[in-house]
Length: 207
Image 1 (cartoon, helix red, strand yellow):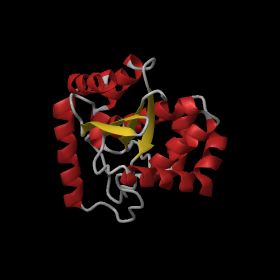
Image 2 (tube, one colour; image 1 turned 90 degrees about the vertical axis):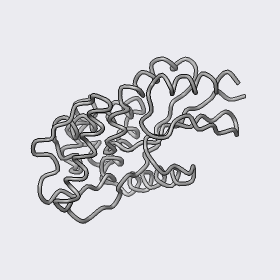
Image 3 (cartoon, rainbow, N blue to C red; image 1 turned 60 degrees about the horizontal axis):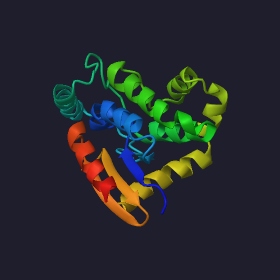
């Protein structure tokens, strides 16, 4: 029997995933000797080309306020989503793929760094230079990262992540699914409370 695998379907520019960030970090630490946790980039709004309208911006910021109230995660609301901002999540997802190509251990740290930069610092993480700086902050070679990030290979691998999420039936983020050999067990859909997730996860592993 192969060790159990916890699939974490998420998008770095999904606000509920940002709200769930402390929980996934706790899970990664608590279960590091029990199971492997693998990140699948879901593709919340990939390929978006149209700038946000004022009403869409207001809706998103209202949503962010809900996440902040529920989870306590920090958000920078002042100046967020400025005029002309295109809410395309593909570049940030591709950045995580590019980081993983350089160093698999950097996948989760860059995912979190992108979230922090976007939500609590107001950085434009749809831009390659910003993403390269975040990668460099983790000790990755900025130029090497930029080359991989801009490559067709990284684009194709990112699309493969999106397809895997769809094939798994994931329709919202974050989603947690445990794989034990061929058996798949949903653990959480959406930003659920850590204690609830741990209870379900422990019950699943006990079987």
